[in-house]
Image (cartoon, rainbow, N blue to C red; front, side, top):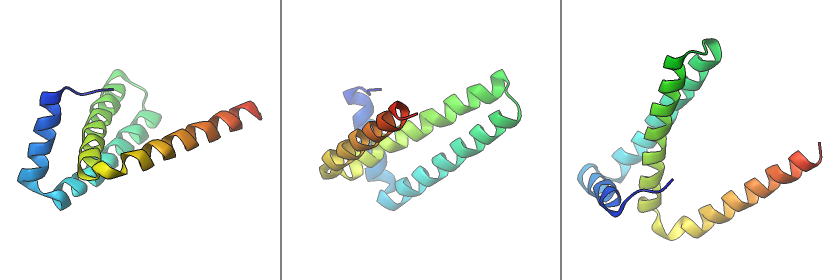
Amino acid sequence: MNITEEQNNILKAAIEKYGLDAQLDMVVEECSELIQAVQKYKRSRTIETVENILKEGSDVFIMLKQVELIFPNRMVKIQNEVDFKINRLKNRLNNK
């Protein structure tokens, strides 16, 4: 998923206004809320629990975009990790 330049600027403004530590705390909080939403879905597979996963997943996505902005020089490292882990998953799937 991509975001617009305007959205990117809003995320930068949030980092500037609230600070790095506060935004990193928000990463933790939003990830926690996504975990809870997934657990609730596993107990009760309803439209509401699906919607909650999507809502919390969106929050996590936004916070990960802010992580990209907080650590801009690390994006190559992140991309390398993503490539490595998807390739590892591909190999696991092919070996079953």
